[in-house]
Image (tube, rainbow, N blue to C red; front, side, top):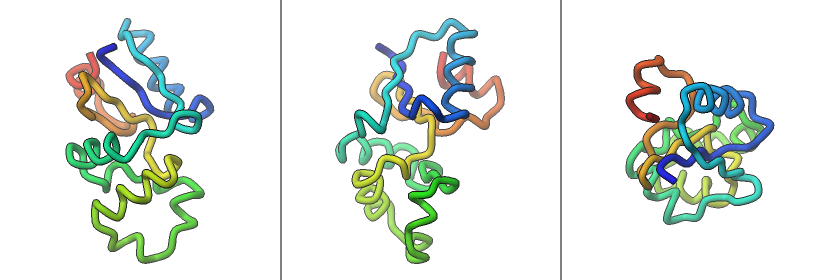
Length: 117
């Protein structure tokens, strides 16, 4: 499978992304991060590619429950946090050919096509 989509089924943004992928005939595998959280090595690879900042689910309860020190955390500290609680990961996260290519779904159509198709 060339494209993997990490997220949770009841996430509105994930639903929009999957609808877009279906409408554009993109073959993908959806991975529910609640049931199958990504491992440290995988998360480290993603952070190396994308950096931790865009990967933070800042609207989630898990993020809000973290202390103020989260604002000064390094990527290594975020890797620890993401590994401990996958709900801290922004959704959806797209991995194409084993490389993280996009997180979230607020980009222009041309960028979506370039990165996901």
